[in-house]
Length: 334
Image 1 (cartoon, rainbow, N blue to C red):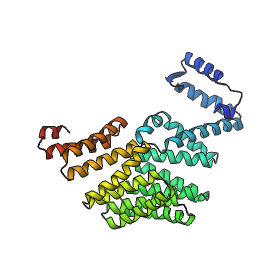
Image 2 (cartoon, rainbow, N blue to C red):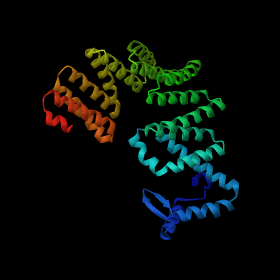
Image 3 (cartoon, rainbow, N blue to C red):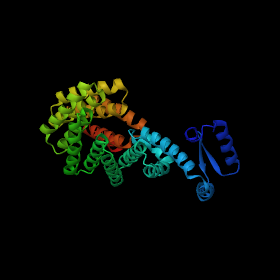
Image 4 (cartoon, rainbow, N blue to C red):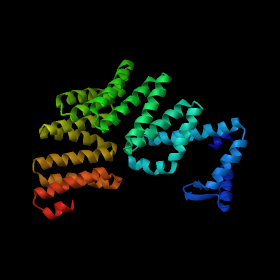
């Protein structure tokens, strides 16, 4: 921020200032170069210094603050909850303040990045009402700016939120709004993502034929574009459809195609999900030893990543597995 607002500001100057404020009890060192301001200092700066400052200079520093926060928030947006939790705990108020200032200063790109990140975090913490408000705000802003690509992206996220709440009719409406824009623009990447989600909705409603059609439309684009991550996701879902229809041989083939990509890319979260499903297939076929191995591979990653939801699901399956083998005490422990 200092480099953007005042190039004469140096790292040693900032460090001296931080040490002086710490010595006066006005900031507290939180480690890793982060200092927490005492409320009295915050109040003084707002009441005296900020009000007396040259508005143009204040806006210069504010723009720098918004830029730094937007880039930081933008980097967090695609992360999993376990990656987001600590940064948002520390900087959540900063992100919200930066969003307000970005809107005031009409800084479109930082505004979009901040809304996207805050909405993604709200969605990951299952604050669906908050996420929906933010994505609606983003869609309206992008529409007014003529930015159809990001407008479609916001509609897609609103579809995911409705889907999470099992409002499949609303979800499909949002997805189709996104799809109309993506197909009009020839945005195959965006279309593939929406095809995939329409497949998920059809699958949730047990319309397996429609789900498979949507997934195959998505997969055709992912394979054409060489998007292995997207292809792996489609392979996994096609495995789920085959499994639902008890075609275990086909399901295992799809899962192993997904797993090969996830392991190659080091995508542990995706690999854990596929390990879990391979465990379910082995269990259904009463290959209990193989099922136990797959579940434990999934569980090792879920525990490592702090994925409690995934771990709980795998504990449950290990309990069922032990029960099927009449190891009832172990089953109860799981």
